[in-house]
Length: 172
Image 1 (cartoon, rainbow, N blue to C red):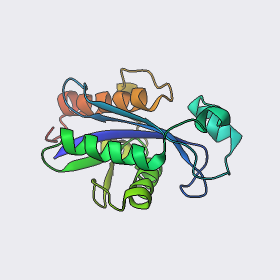
Image 2: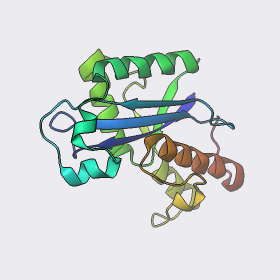
Image 3: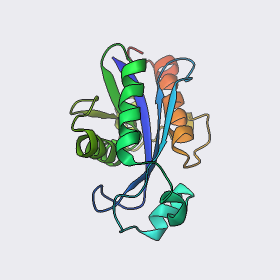
Image 4: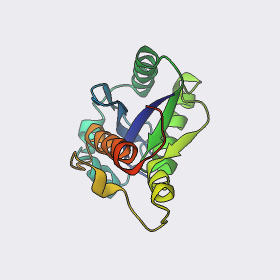
């Protein structure tokens, strides 16, 4: 299995009614040197200004981004080119990130290379330290900037620390 840490930015709470603005992915390995970044043109006229502002882009800028189908095909091909076994989707907030990635894959290209499941980094950490109130975010090295590649990288660093220092049994 190859873990791929993913982070997304959107202009609203759900796919379809709102749009995924950008996303980043990093293959979780010791070098964290294989990354993907996509910026997607809106699929809806609806957006929440405060949600969009988190991404750092204006609506006008997003209208110039790439066609979502093209970006999702590029992402699928990137996964296929870089993963020789089964890709595993993992994120800080998989309920949110997975919802957008899965919806976009099925809506635009009819399949999802991750299959039907995802993993949640926060839940993994809580189980590892046996405390549902603990948060892993202090394990990040890369600053959380809302650039999705930076954020995915920081989360991947946290996962690597969990493996190395906290004894997480995970094959990377």
